[in-house]
Image 1 (tube, rainbow, N blue to C red):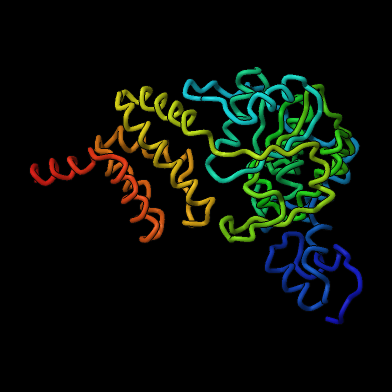
Image 2: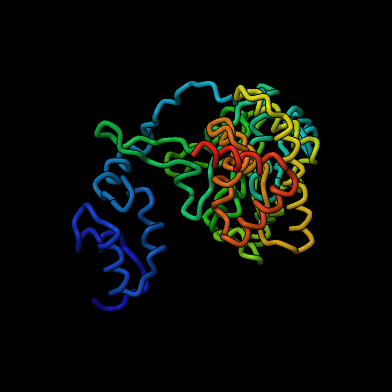
Length: 360
């Protein structure tokens, strides 16, 4: 086949029939010199499932375009549940003020992993009675995932709203979680981040944001990538995209006292009363984080990791075992240094080893 400068859908239809696959498209692109994204973008409304496009579906849709089928919206309660173990800290009060105002004001929250960024947004909405729609972003997230698209349901092709459209229509809080994992496909949200509506070109409908709609994004980086390699997979986000977020909160780990309170509430909820363990864990984590900031170590203990330890303790009943199984994820050198540090903080773990040896 000669090299082509343009793409016509009929070319694929003549060559492969009405149903085409990813392999068909790649073969066609290799022979014609037309890029794969160019072809798949034109075929977007033909897509019936991952890696499969049906051209007869589009013929049917075009014939009934003036009155397309739309999947009915399922009414459900999207207000998160309140967590009795939640302890507010950092920028939580400011975030809550923004969400309670019901003003459109996009917020970007950045910080190290496991310090409660997503949890704080969920609990702010829970306390305010605000509906929350959370979208976990990946490198594969595209317009179809966010805005919506046609789906084959009971043998019929109908339009299905994506989470962004649902949030717009309901006046909900849209949470874009781990947004720094996104590709440039996330740019389909440009108009949304400006407070404008979205025109759904495939069904000819314009969706305006309902009162109260706003956007919150969380990320481990500031959208500039990860220089130290700690967050592999994060990407450099478009500057114009980042500029549309009105403000950025830099979320740190909670203070030692606040973290101790978090662990104590979890310990109590699990039916344990070893509050001394909570105090020693928070002290241990605080020392590790200070050493990390000084460049002494390459890893850090997150608040999430501490809650894992508390749960392990509620299962195994031994402090050091709970810590060990939860720090096994680190390399041997780091794991050993963490365990040795805790051993210096807590003299009772040595007695645990004595008791275990005596019973074996």
